[in-house]
Length: 461
Ligand code: 5AD
Ligand code: SF4
Image (cartoon, rainbow, N blue to C red; front, side, top):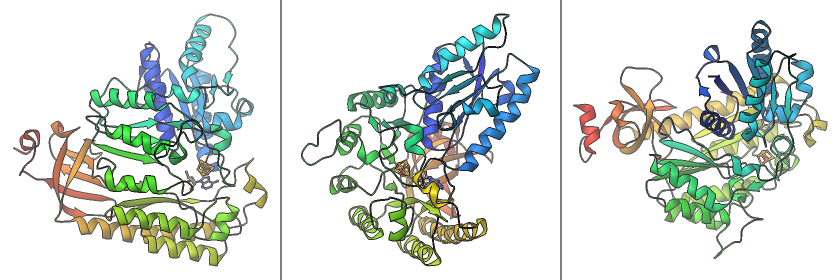
């Protein structure tokens, strides 16, 4: 039996795509392993958002190619965004690659792998690299399989593919193609199945989730298709928590904001990319909103859900970001008070409209700006976590912690990471936890006995 290891770079979309490929391979009789050393086939699912991510994957592929030269039956493939972005030019650099599979062809991986194995087993000359990068109508409907091997307490569900925005720095519209929504019924069916096999929390994934189905489905009673979808997911028994990522400020309307006031399963957590606090830079980034509008949306959400936790994406060192522009970003970043943030140093992406602006901001300045925002973030995050010490919240336990005997990891509805000494029986369960200690990233706590499900009580005794 061929053993496959999939290594994933990049975002949650990529994680989800890898998981779906793994499930499809399992269904065809492949064994999935969790490290490259036990594998007969290694597939790298890649990211192109920044140059560094591409270089990492290329480095890894180069390293694995050495193994291939010693063991001709070893199979090496590159899938996803970098495959799409660099196309067959990857073979020029890495002639040993067996598979190059684009973002609309993940579902073809099993058949390509079958073919490659069959050809390698025949005694003929080394087969050509299989390159499959074309667009495929309906490919957004193919990312639907989930692992049947282990229960997924929390699951990602891809609701759409692609992006029609034209942010000047971003390669995603090139790598993922135009926006395409999956039908609502198919998404609901997938989540119902997940719920019946034990999933309690879902995260709806898309490049811009609040744009979901705008062209395909009607607005009903002033509710966008995305809001209609959230309502449908909300009705599914067994699903207790709903999250989504990522929305765009454009089209973040009152119908969505109101959901935070009326749909209790919608968690008080929002990832809301700001990118910059300077209107001048937002304009060159081709982000069609002002920082004032962005803040207004947050204000409205906080009015309906005051305890909401908000995270964001910010790019520092975009071409021509002056001291004054950055000061605006710093100011708004601090005033808004993000609980989590991903801060990216600008990286030129070939083929984007910002490419022609070059990369005039030095590495040092980018790093300095990065550190300033990280400093603000860790202060705010620590403060918010410290405020929780002494309080009790419901935590969904996902699995063992990376470190510590009998330590288990869970999350609050606000997406704060919680570590608790407990029993493995808690995995997949909700339990009340009293927080005892906090760092900027983690809450440490103790299970609360009173009113806890029997299972949690057993966990302590
Ligand atoms: N350079 C740096 N960061 C980028 N992002 C997207 N493109 C680039 C780039 N060229 C960031 C944005 C986006 C996140 C996923 O990655 O902040 O929201
Ligand atoms: Fe890229 Fe902008 Fe689309 Fe997000 S919205 S994927 S940043 S082009």
